[in-house]
Amino acid sequence: MNKKGLNEYKKVENKSGKAEWIYTGAYYVLPCNDKEFKKLKLVYVFMSVLNFVITMLMGFIDPNSLRTLYVLIPYVVVLLFVFIMLIKATEFYFTPSRMTYRQKEKTVSSLYISVRVLYISAIVFLICHIVFLFLGKSLLQDFFLVPLIVCIIVFSRYLLSKSKKYPCIKEGSALAEKSTYIDK
Image (cartoon, rainbow, N blue to C red; front, side, top):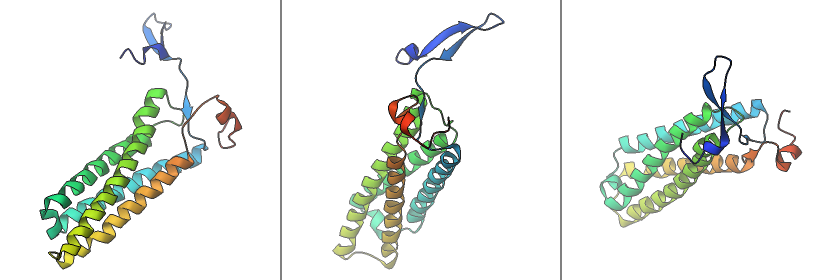
């Protein structure tokens, strides 16, 4: 174990005399019941798979714009963060509803950050692509990228709104006690 999270664990002996580590830190929950939590997980996985398919489709269309450096670099950044978001959404799908601090930081917080960066980088990619279209070297297939990029921006914005609707709160805190969504 790393030293940073060691104070949240306590070493105890079980009945057979073997030492095991028990988590004694605070648990974190999302302010929703189990049914909404499962639905939220499915939404994140579905949207991240959809973003990944759209981004790969943009590369397979083989537009002329991806042959210029100022459009290619934002596309690669979008592709990178779509892939990271896909991995984080898959990790989030397998997390329990009560999370340790490490699970919360690894899944929920990093998923929110990657969605936010994907949203910003997709906007930059759209701006670079529109600049390329106005320079006049574009083909017909270059115009097909604009609605695909807009789809990624819309899906990322939707996931950002979901993240703001369900902030991760400490179980047993005043916010968790006021929440009507948490099953007690």
